[in-house]
Image (cartoon, rainbow, N blue to C red; front, side):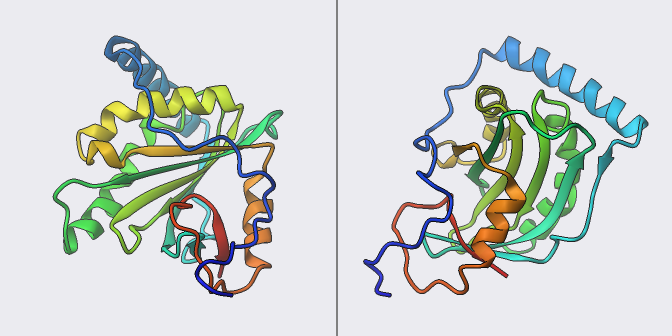
Length: 205
């Protein structure tokens, strides 16, 4: 397969076009973040938030040729999503180099109250920075609209630590995360790349 050949896409049409989030009004975001933190506290108190290790250490290679390693997973106890979507969020940290990435990965656990209590959250795979220094969050969500609302709120805390132009997302409707990973793992090593397709896993090991 040459660099110009398309990477096989086992996930259908590829979802909605990736976009730069249109941020919500700040007062709305502060209210939603407060509610999210409260719900997260409730999930923790009832032991309904978990950090399984089964996917930790797996490498995801994306269709643009970059790769990242899963360094953490967060899963909420809840019913199976009625409207399953995959949400992929990407950003590049501002001014972080070398050991700073390890420090960020360690402290990022403290960011759990910023997402785990949002309506529709099911799970998140935390990915290390790729070769271009871009971090990704790979989420299972219930409902495309609620996933987009989450990203529009997330924009504000991300701008505190990230380069604003680097914040973008992709919604993949009708998909289950584990099926996506299994399909990508079944593809085997990929030798082709598709410029700009940062959100599509082409192989998993």
